[in-house]
Image (cartoon, rainbow, N blue to C red):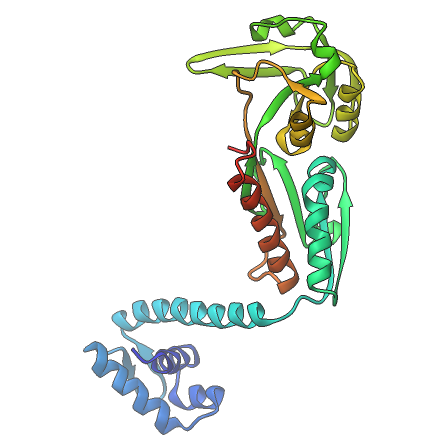
Length: 301
């Protein structure tokens, strides 16, 4: 199928005449008429009814016209995507990310991105409050956890697990064989979460819900980690923040045979048809970093 013929046919239907279609396309009326006639022969159906005053699509022509518009739009989008993919990132890339994941995962990717694309400047805003991307002028936001319904466009790029942890010295002060044994222990509540005290544990078919008792409440996840590291009590923290601490033995996972709910890691964008190269390249690098972590068997799944 010749896409040019689809474009000529669509132009005739939109313009209502061969003459006006030819003017819009910048070619002769004879070429448009000839190509549309060949299209009708190709499909074996009359698509246009020609009168001295106006050209009207047949019923089959109207249906075909709607399909043609979609095909032509998809072709245009494909060329636009290729053109953008070939372009180098420039300008300023504005990113929003939560404190914990931003420091541990996004900052290293930002550093690598800046080295690879020196013509692009990066502004990274860290915080646990949800930023309005449109009013905040952000190109992309990284969100961790569970997304609420939104008009924004989102893509899941990874997952994370949550661990109940405590400092190595603190672990020697208690014994816990069951999630319910944790309810009375000192707990550092992360007030950046919607429900910082209620936790669902699962082991096979066994599920238990435990309400912890907050002795300290902090509204920033890295500060929660600092308090736990200092021996303030237990807390639930994401794997990407405590992986190194657990590996060195500075922190201890409590009841490792029990699982807490896993969450997602998402890139979120303002509504738009295309992403500029600075956004697509950065997201590609962030996904590659996530895949490297997961393939390394470091507890993401």
